[in-house]
Amino acid sequence: MKFLLFLLVLALVLVLSVAALGGLGERKKNMDRFDHSAIRVIRNALSGGMGAVQYTGPPQPLLVIGAGLPRTGTASLKTALEMLGLRCHHMMEVVETKGKIDFWHQHLVKKSIGFDKVLKDLANDGFNATVDMPAAFKYKEQMKQYPEAKVILSIRSEEGDKAATKWANSMVTTILNVPAMCRDVPFRWVAKVIQAAEYFEGSYGGVDLPMYEPEKLPAFYDAWNEDVLRTVNRENLLVFQAKDGWKPLCDFLGPVSEIVQANCHSFIASNEPYPRTNDTANILRAISNARMIIWVSKSMPAFLAVAIALTWMMNRDGSARKKSD
Ligand SMILES: *[C@@H]1O[C@H](CO)[C@@H](O)[C@H](O)[C@H]1NC(C)=O
Ligand SMILES: *[C@@H]1O[C@H](CO)[C@@H](O)[C@H](O)[C@H]1NC(C)=O
Figure 1 (tube, rainbow, N blue to C red):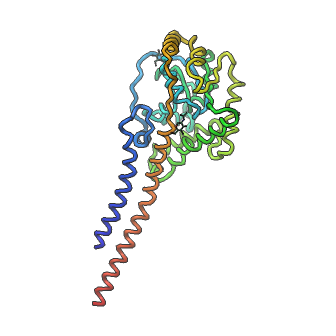
Figure 2 (figure 1 turned 120 degrees about the horizontal axis):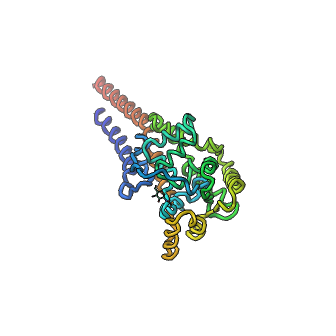
Figure 3 (figure 1 turned 180 degrees about the vertical axis):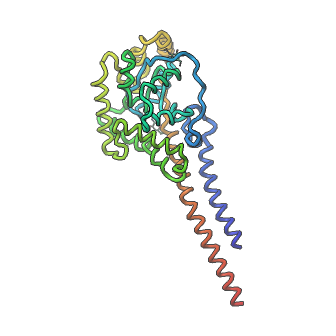
């Protein structure tokens, strides 16, 4: 009897775990390189990233520097820049490529490698454009090395004050969750995941982004954008909202290279829609899957305790009955 009960509770724990993992597997069918599905993000974090296709061409100079904060349409901007013929670095490159979290961790946290090495690494990997964190947080350092590069400040598409609060909200519900989740059970037991948490915290810390004071985030957003406007020469700067589409982007980037110019002409002539790579749903899904895993791991001891208590009680009833017989 007690054995049966024990099996029952064990089965319950198993079913819950499988439910959590099932949620992870669900998105497998539409995996692409920048899929944020939890199974992939978690597997990558556990293994320190996947091997990327090795770039074998000549080192590329940076032609375009994205100075906009994360959650300002940077995934769409990356897609757009790649459509135009540039190879663009985005946060997902770090998270998804083997060894890159470790690499940026050495720069941001251990401070054992300088930014010159980071730039060299980007060039050797064939990147000629950067957007999103962690690179965007270092746009000034990139400009120092590549003063001719065009700078794009991506901003949110909302009007006026709404942009800053929407940005803050978007940060809080998506990527600002990541470090705390990495530091929770069971992820905290994996050294690579703790390294990922430190990498994120190091990135935010490097620009004094108030990650644990959400009420200060809107002011951070405004101050960041004002600083970019003050820092970059107007003729070298495009302030860009995703809703602006190809036209201003092409007017600004056309002169950069013939490849870009030619792609621009064909996109505008054919009314190619500006990409909308909305990764919010994927990120939210990865977060809720990770939360499920955290919940199951934390509930496991409670389930086991209940199983043991019930087994003990039934055992006692059984022996009490035997005695009275
Ligand atoms: C950007 O770099 C890639 C290699 O990563 C290269 O194929 C492409 O032509 C470069 N784009 C421009 C505009 O130079
Ligand atoms: C992106 O997706 C999220 C969640 O699915 C949605 O709330 C948001 O409005 C979308 N944003 C854009 C710009 O389409």
